[in-house]
Image (cartoon, rainbow, N blue to C red; front, side, top):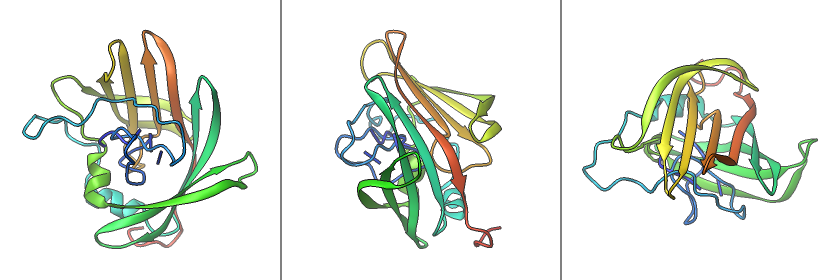
Length: 204
């Protein structure tokens, strides 16, 4: 995903999360109203070679059906919070995703924000320039279990900053885990904690 400032909607961002806002870097989506933390460099200039994305637009569309939801923990040095992403509408062209901050019991805090993105936009949130970024096959322990997938390591945008995005093969869409370091110190870490796809949805 091109940098969304992670699924604010860092994470986002992710592929996928809601359409990125003006302060959101492409590949992570951060919820509107959140402190935007850029964790990846801006999109490469047109014509620059890009690494393959972890998912196609079709794979994301098949997973992010109406009723799909996930819970994301978003950590920063100032503290952490939980976010709930929920697909409220989806069609052949795109999807509407509601993002809400929630408490530990799942109760919505504040006003949810709904944004629409096309499936190709969500796919491209995970598009990184081959000149600086790398990707490798890994197996990771996550809150969702032991998962195999692609790990993207991306430098910048500031000197001394590095970001990682882990996309699990079996979970199309936003990165399952993300992290950013500045001069060796972790400054941002969103992670999916829970994920639910409606039973009987098309594609099962």
